[in-house]
Image: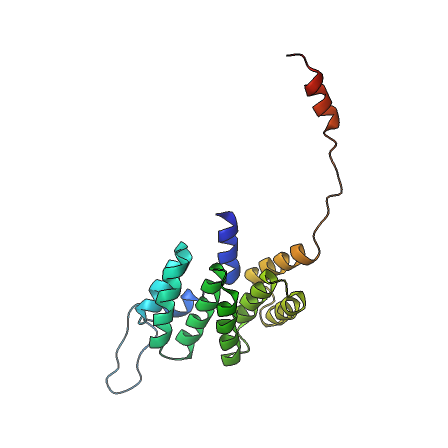
Length: 180
């Protein structure tokens, strides 16, 4: 459970990008309408499913939401969530496809670089992961999820070796010689 939560934290689902669009979204034509709540329910429900750990359903709903996406913001949220969802399913080629689409659409989206770095970490492509981490950190230097992704990278590339080694032989010898 702990590693799953960490992975979800790292992937930063873009659900908040589409959840709060309601009240501030007013059509600017003669028939102005206020929309309360999410207007793309599959995208909203897909994000909720991904956060709840139902990766298959989350991806399925998010794919539907992408087809219905209205505007750049919803499309980018869907692409980001699809990248994250496929990472959680360990389908890295699919995940990479959606990260690439997101970055091509908006090369200032730090989440795309973060998620793509995670793909590269999972597939042991260290140089590419490092480049994406650097780019993501340039775009959003204090992002907690980038810090987590950076630590995943450092653990993989530069693991910390323990400085203290405990010698259990003495304890083991005492237990073997105890007649009880």
